[in-house]
Image (cartoon, rainbow, N blue to C red):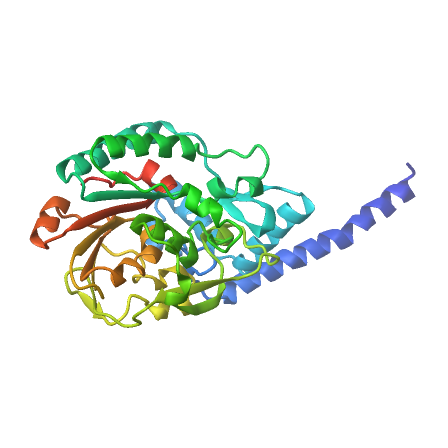
Length: 378
């Protein structure tokens, strides 16, 4: 190559360097004038803040720069747009079927990626099973157990081929046998939900079931035929994107509806021994935020007491977040429904049941949560 050709080739690189330099200078300037955010609505997570200069010491130099690097990453201008662009590039151009721990399935369904039991879960599942069977043995004939299968277990055909998934069917079969042997009643809703899979029973962009899915599970638990016409169905919002979408925010995936089902719109509700009292199980303030699913039962609270429409009986609902949507239905059957979330409730469950005159108990969890939850202790 001649000197002239080399010089021409070098000059061709200058416009590219100039463009990249201007881009990063502009991004730096934009970062300087953009206010820091404490929370990402898209990711539903707290963002790092600028580390204090008092951390900038010889001894803590490494930790300061680690914290500062995380701060810069969290506070970069246009963070939400960059995340969305990355998702589009990886799924559309690179044709990825997994992204951010999410499996991108057919019909716009997004499934959390799971594996077989990890070493920690191999210890947790037997412990949780033992706690469950012990509860059934202490109150024979009074404890019902309902573990909600994940959407990936009902819609196997929509999951990407050869994707890693938990063997839910195997664990549910084992748990069913253990609960019944201990004197409890296991409510297996897999066939019920599979029979209605052509309907809108799971969110596409979230790991929970919809109100309709929860209703079919409720009917299976009560042993009654579904009669949806008996219920008022109110669309609370039509712009819902759930937790799975927040990890892979693809603009091509349509927003969804969250629907309330009720026969009586208002009823007395008390949270955490009267710390907050209201007249509805629907906390509509969440509908304008990022966690719209929290509209049910004011997100996840340690203890909730709901005035029911039934003339007698008190139900103790021990649940994870799957129980939030489900709670709309048994409040029509019992005089009171007491809801406990063991992730936050620190009291003695048996003592609580005795003090409050509980007549029936329902343990309701998502199967994937039950397998790994370290807070289950009845």
